[in-house]
Length: 437
Image (tube, rainbow, N blue to C red; front, side, top):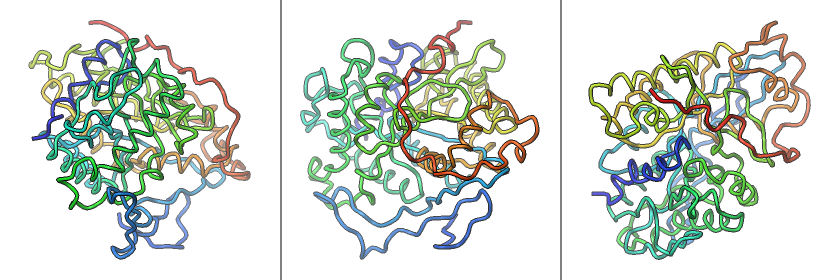
């Protein structure tokens, strides 16, 4: 049994409760060279055959060619309505006795969705090697979410391999999940973040060395130095210094902020793809688009009144669907949703997420994508297109229709080039989702 079974879902809740509503608790290929229909995406080439596998380092990871099932982003044509993107993401992804990683990987395949799994590096580090983790401002071997055991690491590796081959993204939730003012990630310097990121990579790249019993296991089928392009920080803290470090280490986006349902922009050359304020049906406020935030506003505990479980799950589902509807029928801003593999309040939030996936990912013009795919699409657009989209407010549909609104916006270089740095302040008030029954 995985040593971190309860830590994945509950261990970080302690620090998150202290942090308040910080937002975090602890298709087949169409071939090469075919022209895609307007606004559609081509599928990238299939992964290289087994003979082309190139082991990296101790064999924990390997280059296996282009990622299967990963579409190639295309630019909107003048006057074309943008697709509705929805991102489902998972903080501290790991497979434990609940088997939620494997379950939602299956759900994603069923509804043709790609997702982002933010792996906690310590979930690939066994308890007996915990001293290898040297966290900033804490003693070596310290972690607020614990470490793992051999079986748990094996199970997590199995899901990471399969998830990547399904076309999903493996991001990072970093390592020890330290929150708050006493050595929490929000107090770390740029240099300390560089160390944390390097260690998160190292635990993924060296699990065979750190877990000798698993040396015969297959490698992860990707080069993590290239795969890792984005993250979400613990409790949504420390974004400014983390991004300052990450932008020099290959990161293309960050999802540690708090924002509204508007089109994203780059901050300091990195796409800012924050969690978003969404409706809470029956209440006069909005909360962040994450299971933890709904739970905090509903019960304030992971074990609330059982008679309210079904209602709370329905409230989260309906809030997310209202958020989807106002984007889908309005400004078409990407909807960003965050989750944890958890069983809070009887698993009601996992039911809510699954029902949301089933409802939205099957609709016309909707693309349920990973953050990497979203960043690819944004980088493929011309700056004039992105600038126009950025003028639309939450739920605002172009008055003259999309064809007139985006007419003549395609020319220009793709938006992937660096843009002037600007402040990394969060756009929404931190207290916007605070309320009490």
